[in-house]
Image (cartoon, rainbow, N blue to C red):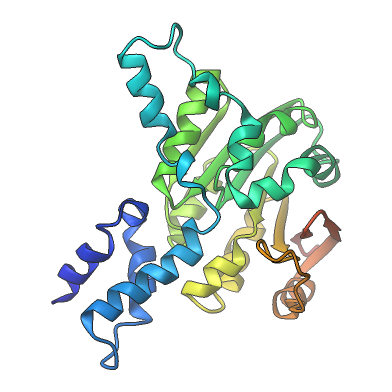
Length: 279
C-alpha cells in the first residue's frame, strides 16, 4: 500500500477518523520504516495515537451530542438542552480520566492560578480534552472571562461547542493540531486584554509525537500571554503509583528561560506557572 492508502486505513477507526492530518502523519512517520510491514505500520500508528489522544476518554462521551440530537428529533426532549442523563458538567468531567482526577480540586486550583486575574481574562486551553466543562469553576473565580479550548479530537470539540451553545456560555472550542504553531499563535494574537494559557497534561503527549516540541511551543507562546500553566500527572492512572520521573528536562528549561511563579502539587497533578522573563 502507498502512503495515502495506509493513512486512510489508519483513520478508518472512528476514534482516529477526525484527528488532524498533521498529528496522524507525525505518528505514522515513527513507523514508516522498512523493518515494518504495512499491517504493522497501521497497528503501531494506531497504538501510538491511542496513547496520545483517546486513552483518557470514555467512548460514552464521544457520541453524546449525536445521541442527544437523535432524541430531540424523536421529540423525546421537551427543550433544546443536553439529555438530562448527560446534563451534568461533573458527569462529563468524570468520564475523561484526566479531568476526573482534577474534579475535586478545580475551585482551589483556579483560585490559586488566577488570583491576579479576578476581573477579566481570556483562557486558552490547549489540548483541552473536555476541560471546557469546568467552566462554572472558572466563573466562581473570575468575574469576566472567556474560554477558548483548542483540541485535536473533533468529537470533543463538537461536544464542548454544543454545550456552550445550549447553555449560552461565552466559550468556544477549536479543532486544531497543536503542531500547527502558526495557527495557534494567530488565535492568541487575535484576542486583546489579559491572556492565560493552560497546558494541562499535554506536553507529554506532544513529546510522544515530536521530541522537544514542547520547548518550541513554549518559546513561541509565552511572550504572547500574561501567564502559562503546564501540568503533569504525578501518579499512574491505573495503578495509582507515584511516578519516579521528575521531568527535569522541562522544569530546567522553564527556569532558565522564563520567570517561574509557582510549582505545586494538587491531587495527582503537578502544576508549573510562569511568564515571560522580565527585562
